Length: 97
Image 1 (tube, rainbow, N blue to C red):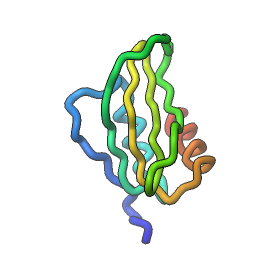
Image 2 (cartoon, rainbow, N blue to C red):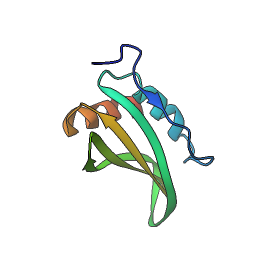
Image 3 (cartoon, helix red, strand yellow):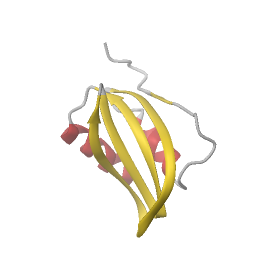
Image 4 (cartoon, rainbow, N blue to C red):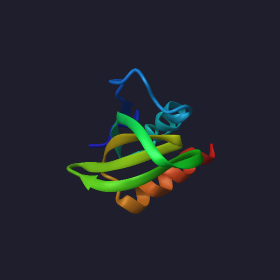
């Protein structure tokens, strides 16, 4: 039961990493992605010069991602029927655009 209009992006936090929302909006257009929810934001010890999105761990119905930019990270939860490899490919495409 794939939504032909793509997934949806949940706005439940007032703060997001700079540049993260446009990438997540592009991800919602991929078939198989139902819901994307940006979650907790925090400080990291190491510095990431540019925005990165990495698949972290599987969750029920999808995956947890870690977005990193500068010394800040943000958890992102994606409900999807895609495999880890397919999701990583979708993320790579969304980051390129």
